[in-house]
Length: 503
Image (cartoon, rainbow, N blue to C red; front, side, top):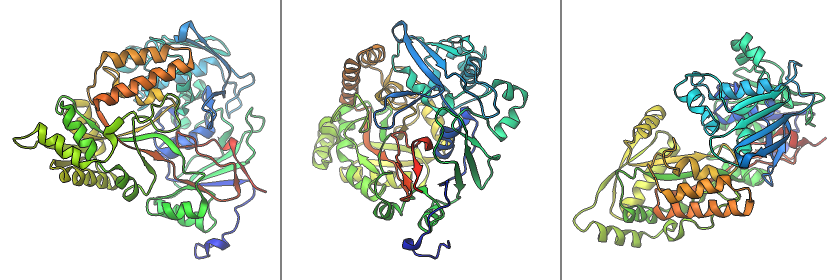
């Protein structure tokens, strides 16, 4: 149907084909997948050892039919599903799993998510100095059993193995022709590539006889260079699922409903380089000056929920109102704190952030809020590579911090960011009490105790305000009515096996 037709006349899509609008992924090679479209497609064609229930967050079998937590959470055993096969009909073996995890960790592969395995024994040798290509903490015990050993207890580590970048790929195929594999990747998931990916998109067909055989025979991921074009296509009947683009969000929710607008395990923060901004009173004043509600409504059209702590809604162990009184908007108190601390004159602070339209809008909003309480902020936009180089060197002052979860755990919002010496701890925060709480939380086998420890760790971090929580994101997918059971999990994606098309 033509895009000129009215929305009410949009024709239903072709039977048995789910059409999803995307921006073309850069790659579908698991260790190198980073963009949202690549991750979404990867979740359909690759099969990590485990998956999780999108509503309860409980672990569920995927490639592994069962698993065990051993030695107090330092060792794990995974049993591969009997009869599991790659899309080329070759059996999936424990050696394929071992090879795939080693490949993810290898220094020469340079995966941006290799850190997922940083607690596995031998990670530093494989990823940091590259002295070996095999993690000593991963062993193929027999054809169907993989064992993983960690450097320290972490009972919930299996959640890491729900990430598509950890999925098994066929060792023989990659070693024979890695270029051919990258051009048309082979996985063991419930969908397979019908043809090599192209600039126009990716077509998947279901795998007959798979343990999680989908109800939808075919999925077309249709590539659009501009998000607005995908929106036009869904309103004219050309697509079934798409992310609403900025500017169309209110119209999308009004027409298609809110089922695709769910809280994400993703947050927006302002971080402090504590070596340059060590004063807690100043950090509190900056937090009080920020108008989170206005930022949410004017810049993000309601898809950013004003934050009251580090962790987003929906994660077990999340502390309620962890930020206490410091995440409210109170410019009068902010002025008073600054006046008392700096009677002789106000400091000028640099604000470092990645260049881009949304980031620029946020930076100007922060600048305006802080100007209202008498603080001068120098805006310093950077290209992405330069921004990360700045953080690695520790040369930033105040900086924009976007944080998107790779696994659905409270741990993600405290351990990587605030554990002493962690690679993503760009604030240089180091408090032994917090380190101890996190170690105890990771090693606790009791869920209630574990949640309490994470809650305590979050509250303790917020006492020091090394970062200011601004908001937590919501997904912005929309789906036409014929897509039944549509959902978005808190990592911002979905598995097509869990939805269906109305007949």
